[in-house]
Amino acid sequence: MRFEIPFSRIISLLAVAAALISPCIVRGGSIVFVQCGPPCDSQVPQPNSDYTGVATGNYQTLGLRSDGTVVAWGFCGKQSCEIPAPNSGFTAIACGDAFNLFLREGGVIDVTGNPDYAPTNVPEPNSGYVTIAAGLLHAVALRPNGSIEAWGFCGFGVPHVPAPNADWVAIAAAAIPAWA
Image 1 (cartoon, one colour):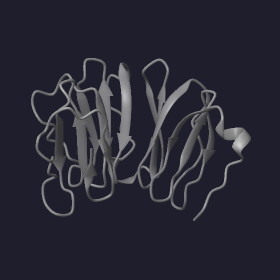
Image 2 (cartoon, helix red, strand yellow):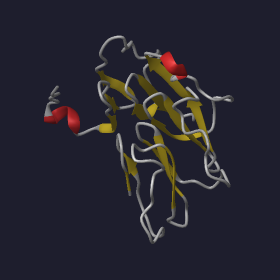
Image 3 (cartoon, one colour):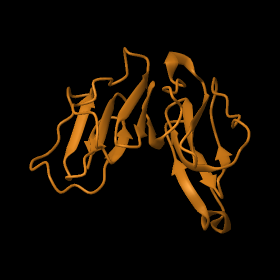
């Protein structure tokens, strides 16, 4: 499937997220494009404003608002639309297949979703993380010292972080392997 966006609309994009069937775009604080195949609900929760980030899984979408709260929508099977309490203080979000990662102020990671699929065993100490990424069934997080933590299942067993595990500045996660 191919999506075309006119260049004039790209200039002010704030965030873009894409998964298997649910791409999503934030512009000017509003969700301006959501494409979600069945059985997904592509209705953006109202009010459609103050979004600073977005993340999409295979069927679910998370929106991060400027006040640190998160909203979820889409096909919420497999517990993929649960938001940890209290719904405040979030700084980043990421979606896997049937799970979500939430980064709180102070760098604590919360995980929600189906426990059969969600990589819930966040490496200790669960604090001080600076960014997060979610793959199909695995998660990746970056610490302030430039080291990476990876956990869950990546298709070939436990995710592997290449040596030396230092001086990383960004992370991303794909369906199977994790990349730094």
